[in-house]
Image (cartoon, rainbow, N blue to C red; front, side, top):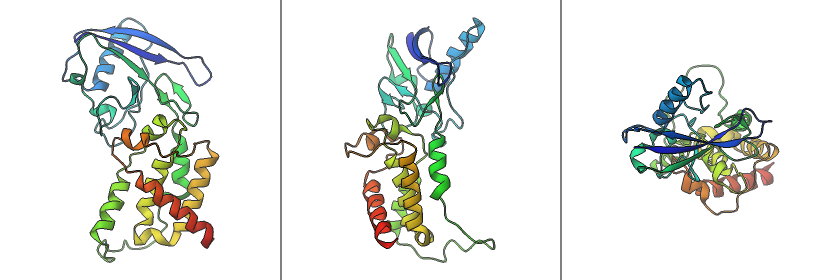
Length: 247
């Protein structure tokens, strides 16, 4: 396939960004989207030009690093997949593909298509864990958990923290991400002793970092590559109200 890539180029967070057009020929339909960008960068390097900076790691849809906005959609046109799982067969000969970084104030651009998502790390650091005393690991089957609850907790734990929910939300809300982490632990017995402190700390950190509020329009759920349900946001709100009363 012959394509035109319209890519956002930005030297750093302070620099002004601009779109550049790059024609690319002989693209195999079997390439992944990131493999296609690899080919582009090889072409640019051979010409002595600066390659396009983009984030990636596992390329298996697990790590959440491949955060690209493609033709106006987080992770591209397909539902329930990350950018690294997107293949070029979903585009057509002669297409112009617009590629941008996440657009959210809490995710400042580092360079080109790479954004700083350390805000998510800060939220996790204040409460996205279960504290345990040093000692032997308890048997996983020591505490019976109903299957419905364990399934819901596992569904929440599937969140990979890619930031698509923030990028798609008009308010740059991180509530789907935070609620998935809060919900995952609030449902399990191991997470209940710290439930009030956890939700208060994570929500306050989220707000302090400049993430917006949820308006229940559902863009986050629609674009989430792991299809995390916005029902977790409702659970997080209940957990927060409970913590306000108990605390």
